[in-house]
Amino acid sequence: MKVFKTQETLRKELEKYTGKTIGFVPTMGALHRGHTSLLLKAKTSCDVVVSSIFVNPTQFNDPKDFQNYPIQIEEDIKKLEEVGCDILYLPDNVSDVYMNETDFQVDLGVLDKVMEGTNRPGHFKGVMRVVKLLFEIVKPTHSFFGLKDYQQYLIVKEMVSQLNLGIQIVGCETVREADGLAMSSRNLLLSFSERQVATTLIKTLEYCREHYTGSGIGDLEKRCLSMMSQYGEPEYFVIRRADNLQEVDADYRGEVRAFVVCRIGKVRLIDNLRIN
Image (tube, rainbow, N blue to C red):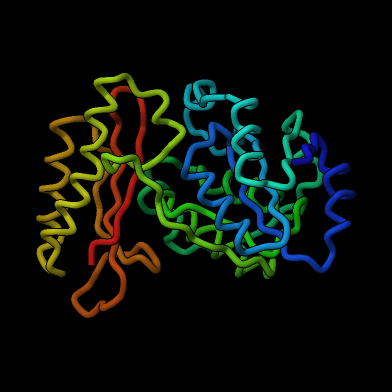
């Protein structure tokens, strides 16, 4: 695997692959099996696999979250090599990523105003800024995102569509621990007892799936929120249309997902599940 610290040297390397399919997996490091599953999907789908490790300060609302985000570069590089990643963009500083930034406008409708958009104002603007810049640097044909961050996946997909970037955004199913907890870099921050309690997220989502009938949605959301509050500090538990994150009405026949965010101790965990 070749490692590049500047976008200038990376661009020169990528010129060799003109006409090839390039699969891109952007990350913030602290890699786990969720990330490596994306890389393996890229490996089987594309000629060249590129990843990036960049902890983006503009998408953290709480400075403490940014400061506490786990950094383990040597372990990450080893994992990337093990799955056959070809190229890693590992910028030395924030300015290398943002040096050629230009303004852009995307109308997301309600996509960035619900759920995470309500609880983390400005978060998705930060995500779109850095993802667009990374896309312009790498120029991938495909990019792979985990569906654990489902709202982010929809927003990136919408941004790519509106800006005509010509990149295929591939959503990949959430990878879970043996007990169902969604793989997340933040899991490293959980104490032993908090780690045991964290399975409440998937258990509540599965309860929701078992009891979802298409009606009485508000009552089901309240029951699930109450279940979560026994073990942590839930921020929300909502049931939404999978295509646009709006509320489910009686006539809707498409995919429905339940979404949960809960703080276990000081760690903010997120998960979702298809329930129909």
